[in-house]
Length: 222
View (cartoon, rainbow, N blue to C red):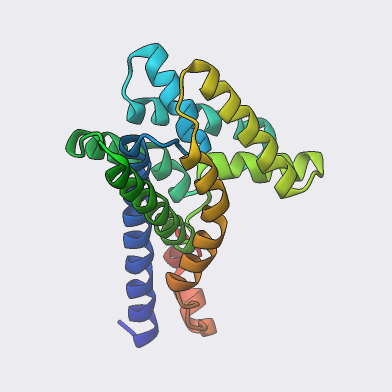
């Protein structure tokens, strides 16, 4: 195996590990916000509201909602990647596993600690899985698809989606509070920071010989 091929293998392994770790930590961070009891991130509000109404766990609801949102990609002509499909299942499973391990917080210090930990961990998780570059999550893809189809700005589309999601979740019984506001204010800067921290170095330039002789390298592109 050439040095270039070896470097590509190491790089792909790192990306796969980042994807899996980021998605698992994303689910764990969402669970910490639940246990903190001070308000959830927008989609978490919807998941909790649906969970209250259906009796299903939040993780299972997250999987169902993610799969449903993914179906909305079809008319938007969005193409899912490995990260997109993994997002649907791994986040929900990790959320339920963390909820089973971490009890509800009691008292302001414990609740604030879980809130801060959940938001920071969510930012790190976002940086990890997005920097892996295996495709956006179902909800992010909905945002970018609507942006492309409607011509509206990303900011407007995202804000509109999250207002609808939070309002629906709140009506269904989801938790909206200071944590929801703190998350909205902090997640952008945190995600930007961690995207830089976890950025995967660019692939080494391929010679013509390597490019011609390694079509399998194109299966998982950056």
